Length: 378
Image 1 (spheres, rainbow, N blue to C red):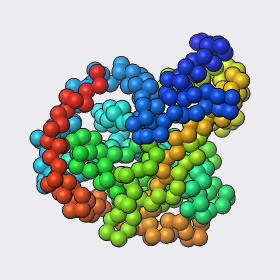
Image 2 (image 1 turned 30 degrees about the horizontal axis):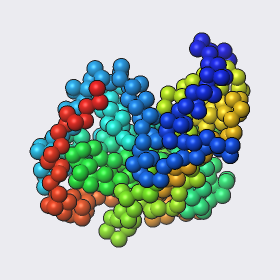
Image 3 (image 1 turned 60 degrees about the vertical axis):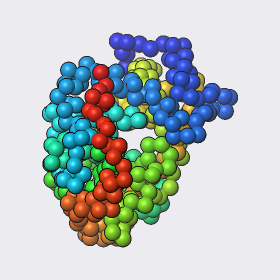
């Protein structure tokens, strides 16, 4: 497939090398080596990619920034004793969808739109009408060793039941609520009754894209990974005597994020012109390639680079949030009925309020110093 904007092989080879070095990688005969061993260093590795995302969003979002930033609270507007959260499911092409995108641009790592099915949520404080946090769910990756070992399913079971798993591709609080540890609350509500019901309402009666099958619209498990190695946000996150998030291990450090800072689009154009994709099903959107990994892998091979350049070496901690007492049995196909925990957003907040929010507010007043103007991007 020829493209209007052809990318030459020498140019792209040079561009990829320069981009990797700018992110802190050394290029050796054996592969690429990341020269970063602290969270601050890892944030710098992601800096080019996040700047590129902000630049790409400028034309679309900057005309709305005055309105969007007014959804962010000043610290002196918050009364921790009066916070009352509520959840909003985001519809596409609305002001709330712009707000979700605007908030996600402030994350320390680039946030994709997720894959396949997608649910986006905003969490607001009823007392101030300001944004507390965001939560985005999308289709999980098919193979994730530590998740699959925790579930204990085989390949057939995974094919049949992965539909009942979603991945939280973005999750957290925005300032000044983040200063009050509200990221923990956002993490807790991935297992809430409200999130499960939105999933059910959205997908009940729908057929899967590729196989055109109807499956029960039951959400059994939400997974997520830490952005920068080991997570302090999710670790030991308990609701009464139950761990909401359970650490199941670390990713191997393979992926494509380090080709996302404006380079991936050129890799896609080059690959579309010089390589053949494997995606044959129309449900994939008519594209030739199944996913970003396939594009990057085939591009590297066509450029004469080893595919171990996809080993970015950022090992992220993987967490699972089961929504039911028998989540694993359900995903293995041993039962067709989920025994849901069934706790509501209000249930989780009341626990979070006493356990984390009020003690933090009593000992740390730094949240009061935040002003929304500090959050401007343009």
